[in-house]
Image 1 (cartoon, rainbow, N blue to C red):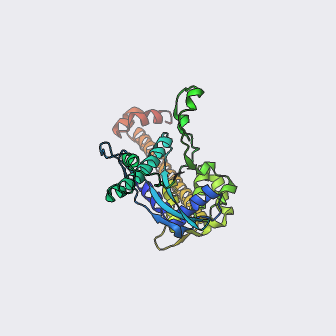
Image 2: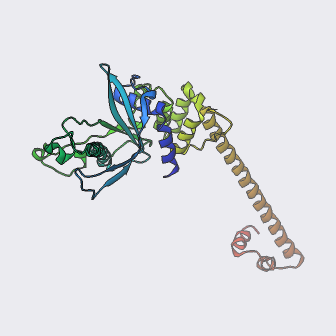
Image 3: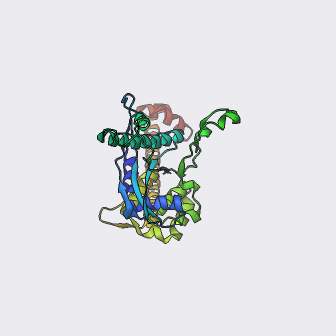
Length: 328
């Protein structure tokens, strides 16, 4: 796993960030999901085909998977929430996420099968025994949300049907579709960004404007939130956008606006120094030419040599000889 993948996974796995992301997407920013009600789930999912045949087992690894407990009419309801974190556009995302969801549902059925086996099938009918899943068994719903950390507009398919070639609509009606849930910085309006309640808002906002430096600087100047960004958030922004910000290990809070301005000032100073060095080099070259011209003239005057003879004696390069001949 590359460093950007590891950092984004660690960041989004924080319960406050995870809850913020899903509160935005599922509830329009309303604080419905309490971070304390989220519990980590094993991201390794092994699903067996229905029944007892173990051939063709599928193993998948999600980025982050948590189970959520919510109360509805004083009853506890459980939902599995998973995220897929993308640094690049994935052009097969509908199939990838559909497989994750299917594997998870299959694993839930396999768990039910194992439970009934422990009871030796005494709690299910003969029909139910064939599938291992009884009429009373229920699945936990799974919601997978893709978060894209790139600044480009997502141009990949957002649903399974978009991945097909030409298919007659009469046939398409019988092919189940699968739509991905997707958050992309470029797709977030200013109003959308304000619906986030953690520093995830700053992450998305910085990425959104990162390809336009002038707009980025204006945004950093006007948004007070960027003056007190946590080191973890600044580090994530730095890695996913290659911003080049120097983040001190001694600082827990980073002023992003000042950090970017410092980078620009360092760049300008480096440019000025390069210009000064180029000027010094040009000066040294001009001094060398004047010295060589003076030496040529002295040899011509004192030893009565021709210009060519004088330049040969001084071992002057052919290229410089051509230049000096026009000056003598």
